[in-house]
Amino acid sequence: MAAKTNTPAHGLFTTGEPISAWTVSTALPVTYQVAFTPQILGPANPALAHAGAPAGRRLVVVEETVHRLYGDRIRAYFEARGLTTALCVLPAHEQVKTMDSVFLVAEQMDRFGVSRRHEPVIAMGGGVLMDVVGLACSLYRRSTPFVRVPTTLIGLVDAGVGAKTGVNFGPHKNRLGTYHPAAVTLLDPAFLATLDQRHLSNGLAEVLKVALIKDKRLFELLDRTGEQLIEQRFQGPTPGGEVLVRAVHGMLQELQPNLWEHRLERSMDYGHSFSPTVEMRALPELLHGEAVCLDMALTTVLAQRRGLVERTERDRVLTVMRKLRLPLWHRLLDAATLADALADTVRHRDGRQRFPLPVGIGAGCFADDVTADEIAAAAAELEELACAAR
Image 1: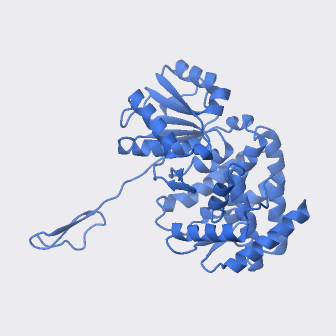
Image 2: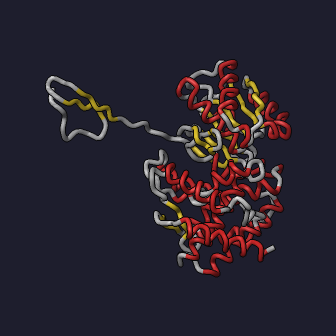
Image 3: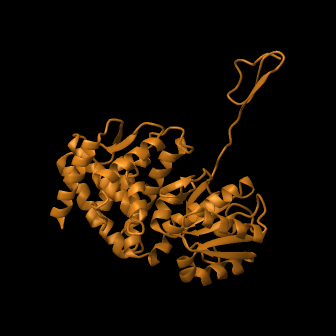
């Protein structure tokens, strides 16, 4: 049998006569849902009970702080819906974002006897918990569905809406991971009512990322209402709904055409060139969004020095960062750390910088020619600007 020609993109292709080699070309269609779902723990609301599969047994993995605040309501919800559940309460922060936590979840899945397709695990917590549970589900029987219920702002606008899972390995952030999107992500901003100011600001850094690189309208909203949104925890009269919707929509617009990261030039990597190394070396001092903001502050100054951002725009960006109660400077923005960070990012991006830089406010470009001297000069200027603002 000779090799096939002019065939569809997917199929089984053979080489030689008689056949001596095969090429298997296939694709896995992926569909998942992200939806704002107010009052998700209201007993009359069926959304969580039916998310990902018909109502049935559920293993619910809950971050320990969420369990302390909402554990009784979570139990009452599933009892009211008549579902058999087991709760697994897990600490979840960067220092325990490891394979040990993944194995703890896998052990609970095994003990509960999760079926392979029709009993999605429910993850309720912040980004760390969802990453850990997602990785465990991707590994358990090679693919077990799960449902995400983010309870932090960074989970709601960032970690909860994509396809990636991951845990830290050694000194490296998210070095071990998979692509395994949740079947359903349910977003309820009511959880933000119990979030403290620092974690609200932490999530707003990822909202600001979307604003700076692709959505000037979102930046204007943050400039005008960001302080009030923090004070009101997205619960008050200040219209936070548009901020959340634009942030989630902007993320999904960028992720959907490139969900598996076949293209390594990704605008949503803005703020993530230096921050992984800085964050891990600073642990537990910096939260993820705080490290991302430091990265964005540095690259805003770098872009201004390149003529991509006006000086007035640079100053406005830094002012909004301060309004959102985010840091502009940290001692780890030193030459050695930044050089190590960039080298690791180049390896991650397959040998090129593919460096996202802002163009004005609300647009971006990619660079492959950023030098160590240029980074050091931008860092020195940022330190001066941060000190002058105190």
